[in-house]
Every structure is written in structure tokens, then in C-alpha cells.
Length: 305
Image (tube, rainbow, N blue to C red; front, side):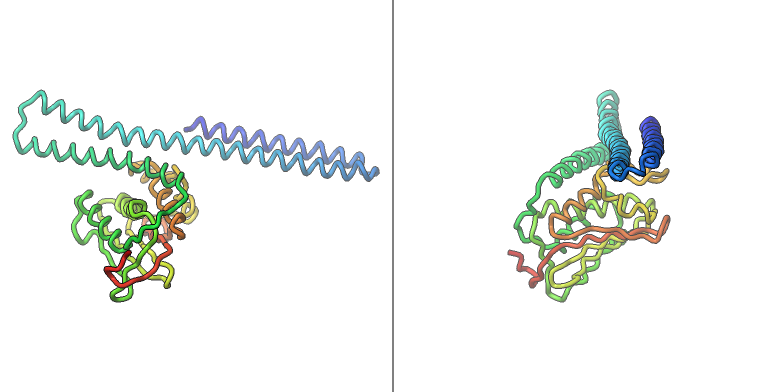
């Protein structure tokens, strides 16, 4: 990673030096030939074209290096997320094979291996889901109750992270008797909501207090809002966090493992379903709120076809 940064700095410096030299040479040439109108005009045009080309070339090189950095970080993160649970499962299996383990300890080993298996499957599913949502353009035509999707995802998150009931609080701001129906793909919507919940839980630290709202914005839009009391997000990072492979640099985020794909999946699913996703935060340590808006229609509960 430091090598990539050095390359970015080197290309930037070389680009700036080249631009400065080009500017100096062209200004000198124009000054020397200013009396000849045709030469002057062509000199100015040539000057602008060369400068534009050099600037674009430098920007392209720096962006490519940054993309390579993100790809390297993604590969390192995925490798870690795959190797760690596999190594853990292997260690417990070898222990069970070689030793006589008391029944209580044996059950604990089984529980840990089950959790590691879930972690492994979660990483694999996230990588596959990122590939699917990035390649498919149609959103599907099934009628999906968003409130039911949220309820199912909340139950799964509670079970997966062994959370108390009050750790995740759900509030429905829908007209009495109405259901928010989204036309689309149910598994993709579940994946988006699950990723929002996972993100909020992971970055809440030891004290998980997350509120989830399903709110009717107008007759054609519904929002899922996930608010946590975790580490918060700096203003300059609020848009970057939805990019593929991007993770906020810093000590805290290095301790929280991830692939940098979760919020990218959320953004892709939201766009595919005629909506958007955005984040707000008061700053570091003050929590954050993620809002996913989707196209919807509202019907009486029980009517989803």
C-alpha cells in the first residue's frame, strides 16, 4: 500500500513538472511569435490542447492507482475474512479429533464453528451479491412488502449477533392499515436492508442501540431509515462510502473487518428500484443515519399481489 501511495505522489509530481515546463515553453513560443497572427492563434490552441491532455493524463493515472489501492485492500480484506473462520473451524475440528472433550465444551466448540461458518457464508454471499447487482439491470416485477422485509431482516440480525430485543427498535410510520409495496426483487431488497443493519451494528461498538424506521414519504415513495449511535462519519466521507471497495481510513475501521461492498450493494439495489440511498452524521462519535428511499405503492395490509 505505501508503494502505491509513493507511485501516486511520483506521477502527480511528474505531471505538475511537465505541465509547468509545457506552459513555460508555450508562453515563450507565443511571446516570440505574437506579431504573426496565425502563429499566435495556433500557438494558443496548441498550448490549451497540450495542457488539457497533460492534466487529463495525470488525473487518469492517479485515479487508476487509487483504484488499484482499493482493489488490493479488498483482496486483503476478503482473504482475511475467508481464512480466519476456516482456520478457526480447522483448529476446533483437530482438537475434537485428538482429545476427549467434555460435553459442555464440545457444545461450545460446535457453537463457535457454527458462527464461523455463518461468517464465511456471509462473506461469500456478499461478494456474489455485489457481482449480481452490478451486472443485472432489471429489478424484477414481484410485489414485496417492505415492512415485512425489514421485520425479517431485524429478526435475522438479532439472532446472528445474539442481541437483546431492545438493541434493535423498529417503528413503522405508515398510514393505519396500509402496507408499503415495492415492485422488485425480494432477495435483493433483503440484502440491502441487511447490509444497512450489519453496518449499523458493526460500527456501534459494544453498545448496540439501532432504530429502524419504515416511513411513507409520499404516495410514490417509501423510506427505510437506519440510525445508530456509533462512531459517526466525517462530512467528506458521506458520499465516498457508497463506492465499491471503499472503506473509511482510520484505526477504528481497521479493527472492524469488512470487504467494502455492503454499502455499494445498498446503493445498487436502491437505484435499481427507482430510489437512492444517502447518509447523514453530525460527526465523529455522534452516530450516523442511513436512509434508503424506494419507489412504492400503498395498499391495505394483506394485499400484495
